[in-house]
Length: 372
Image 1 (spheres, rainbow, N blue to C red):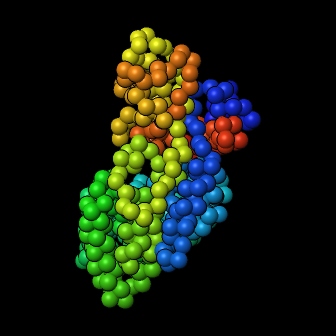
Image 2: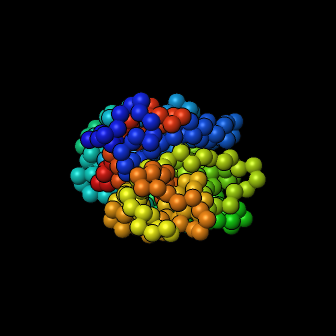
Image 3: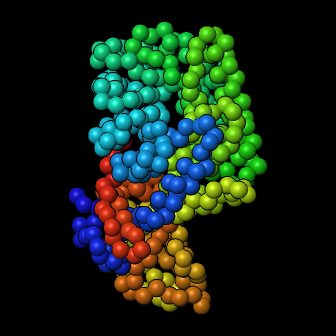
């Protein structure tokens, strides 16, 4: 299915049928360049997270801008991106279950693929699948550095797991994954610094223990859009995984950024149409819960002072109009900034890519619905 069934290249943005997932290409390209410039000369590799966009075109653009490859979260995402021309994928997740592990091992025949582990039984399953497929699979130990999600404890437990991976004939210990996800949306710079300093110390301790045991630890990877410069400067991490920087969203836009931190632009929007104006202080859009994820808050109306997206139901978004504000008209189209870009993207078949007010391209969300 096309990104929007009644949309074609060359038409004006205002002619695009709604709801539609709109991508400002100029802003996207500036974001790609800003990230490349931010890490240039640091000695830290850029491996952006593709779970934000799930799009092979964007992943290839990131690699063209200097990334070594991309991250993803699911085997199905990795399969879709590899089929779309991405040659190096790190699955930043534990993959459990015979069907998924077998597919992961088969994918190693097509691209450079790595995966995480935090359990010895899972390591044994990965080794058996790789051996059956006749491949050697790279495995990184995921260390819990503060997010309290997946990940083995730092220090001795991580060392024991690294030893187990290194002893497997069909696996290769490829390093540590030390991602502090919850730190990305800590609002204040000082608190973010403190969280990443603690995470980096846990990663440093673990890396030192592993190397002192005679096991090479070539990669320490992690970081996100909210903290990537901190990991880059830690002298522990040599790879970073920011993802949302390509788009940004209302949640990231609430962070307070430090002086000198690169400012990434809002490039992702949901285009919606005013379908009802039942009262002077209220209007209704055709974009509700099925058009924009609200897990990180409601979307924001872009560049429309005094107009607030106040309530969402399945197919309706209710706008609250302040006294004196320019009231939207019936049929008018408005841009919304999603509260959380990643799950919003997964609601759409594709991006309506716009430059200077006209549709330039229609890109599929290559891995849409790839959650297994």
